[in-house]
Image (cartoon, rainbow, N blue to C red):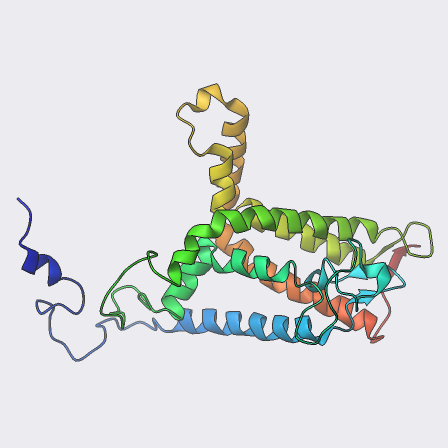
Length: 273
């Protein structure tokens, strides 16, 4: 027998039947620590990435062919020709980043990521801020209305992220061939390669990738290859949270290193060539 309509409406933390206490929660631990640290981490990346994206300078090291991932692919008419591996077709205006064809999709891929959405739901959206802490929202509509309904497009941004990861891989590979000819390896090459490997790890460990590999299969035994792929991706998926944070750090580190070299702050230590 189903509950009366009145009882169904009177549910949640704002229901009349909830214990009337003055405290927001009876938790005695430092439950605010985690959301504060998460917000600080997000803020640091957003501020740094925004400033760098609109600087439109110090993004390419001509001597070694290093291109920062924040400017890849560099398709603005203001880009250095050597850094424009895929042509130049965007106007050179201050309000349009040189890599405007990729940055919005990468941002949406991260925003709709299952880990990231869980993180900022608890911190920015506060739904709820922490376990056993009442959220400030009187109603809950889930991901059925704007803006949260956009979360359902995550799988499509995953496909685009794969293409952009291929572009970043291409950038890292051709950087081994010096613009003046010959083969060379420097610290910058190693940083670019490590960054690309970690980006691939984060992208492949995505829940959408796991679904692409083994979703909708009724009999794993009939699809041994896809089952193997699904198994390997599932192992990576367990650490998707760690990869999400690590790649934020490596993206900033890689960009900062390329920027410092392009600005002439120091020279790139060379191992070969």
